[in-house]
Amino acid sequence: MIRTLIKDTPSKTGQKVIVYGWVDSIRSHGKIAFIDLRDVTGVIQLVDLKGNFSKNLGNEFVVRAEGKIANRPEKLKNPKLKTGQIELVIENLVVVSESLEPPFPIDSEGYEINEESRTKFRYLDIRRKRIRNNLITRSKVTNFIRNYLSGKGFYEIETPILTKTTPEGARDFIVPSRLQKGKFYALPQSPQQYKQLLMVAGLERYFQIARCFRDEDPRHDRAYGEFTQLDVEMSFVSQDDILQLTENLFTALIGEIFPDKCITESPWPRIPHKTAKSIYGSDRPDLRKDKKDRNELAFAWIIDFPLFNKQTKEDFFHGAGKSKFAPSHHMFTAPHPDDIKKLDQDPLKVRGLQHDLVLNGYEIGGGSIRIHDPKIQEKVFDLIGFTGEQKKQFTHLLTAFKYGVPPHGGIAPGIDRFLMVILGEPSVREVMAFPSLSSGTISVMDAPSPVEPDQLKELAIKVEKD
Image (cartoon, rainbow, N blue to C red; front, side, top):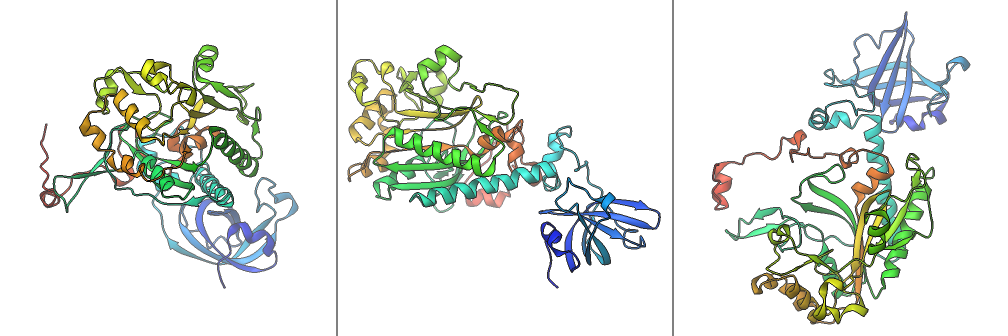
């Protein structure tokens, strides 16, 4: 007899089945005992008529239970459970593995529990219904995106994780090369340059559920180290094409996966950056009519950003040279066609073809039409003060642009932040399987950690102690 998933047991009334799972709770009533058994699909009540099978059980034990599915007595039916109309009368039960008592309760929402403890024992925390459902919902969201974009003629293409360090904004994570001692790879802050090269390659419609790595200080809406984004790039498109595709995708996704949610306004408003700052005091305004309504989703586009901002001291750290200008978005964003002459006259008045996607007061994505003219790209490099050496780090891109580059653009919504907002969670860590703490520690693996001296020697690296 093969295993039956708990979600399928209501259709097996009168049949003998085998179920596996974790003991959720045990309730004794004299000689008879009831065991709630949980697998990833649901919970079922097991009936131990003589109380023999439950005597040596504990919560979170993994068991195999065999018995017949029967209808519950009318008074004992539970309409809150999908399996609340039936129960399994145990004929045989085997303990597959025992469990220690968990270090914290897993039958609550978990918000009251110390986050470091929850993270250290994350595999137990994921057994919590809320976290489990968050991760299952995440899977549904990414699968929907894949199917939707594939149906629109997009190709899912993976780009390298080991890449080149270039001055793009945030700090890079660097990885030493064993074969080329003294040289380093970088983990990608985003697949930005690769997806532009894919447009040069003529693939025209690309997407990827991409892992990105940035050594930035964490916030409640930004995890330390790594995050996931939907990365999209298209050739021969206008900014309007990108916005419309994104709007259609998320509207369809919400209708399918979050039918209880209501989008405040459609089409989504498109607000110039200057207007947003003037009216709302923010370039990520919360446009909900009732901010206490968790089911209200107020999407908006912020457009017409300045191409450049005045440079600050922080910009120098990220690779900018001695110039008055820093890129508002990134250095590959195209200037508005009407403002190209201002690049020579007054760069701070140049608008960029940038677009940010805002949801309930959070920026959940950003993108732009890209520069495809090598001369304009070099001009932007000059305006942000790149030295000759810094320009050389982009030789691969500028060389590719000499071989017939199409006009192109894209967007990269953040999966973690989108889920945080739509699920009403207080932190992106609540929608990630194994998040790091704000200190950068991944407690469940006790990382980062020292490495063996022989490993460092092989890489020709010496570690200096403070």
